[in-house]
Amino acid sequence: MAAAEQQPPPPEGCRPLSALLGGIAQAAYYGKAGITEELLRGQLYPEAAPEEFRALRAKMGGLLQSIASADMDLNQLEAFLTAQTKKQGGITSDQAAVIAKFWKNHRIKIRESLINQSRWDNVLKNMNWRVDMKSQSRHIDQINTPVAIVEMELGKNRQDGPAALAQKSSRLGWMKPWLTRSHVDDSPAVSE
Image (cartoon, rainbow, N blue to C red; front, side):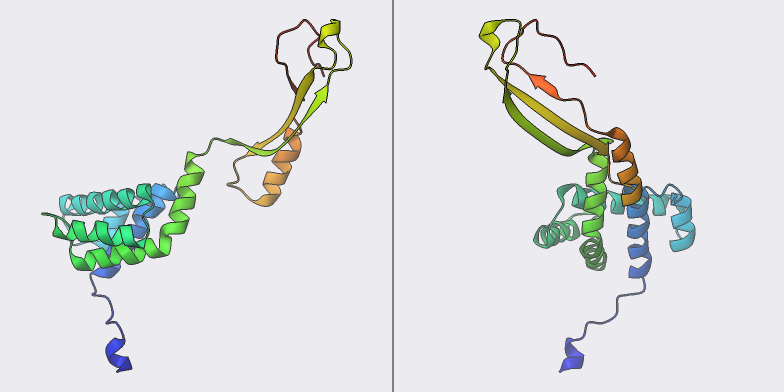
């Protein structure tokens, strides 16, 4: 009975498709510019005509982009792929199985890559704040008014190693305190 429960090995045509999905992910999400359409076709589908391969790559790239942009969980993925298999000019059930397995194995890495690509270069590393009372002012009515002091530490996006990140953060230092007032006055500005 245990032998009957064991799944059969994937069809031979699934390996190139899995590798194609990996190549698309490498180029689109992991920044590997060397993964070109010609390289993928030559390595994975050398017998396919360029137009035929371009159509397959575009279809698989579009499906992967839809799946990744929606950050589909396994239930959403199953419903999406089932709809794609029933669609005219869609995918086969074997292709759907390969895509599902690929997404199950690569979902977290692709999601992290998309998050890193959507961040700005500088990110907020740390923030401290406090509210002080003004003890001196040119105008007596401004004494004992609350003043917010905010310290922000900015750093580079964490795409490189921890040592490089620590070095960059130490060069940035703390921002000068930022004084926020509830009204405009003629008190001197904060200087170095």
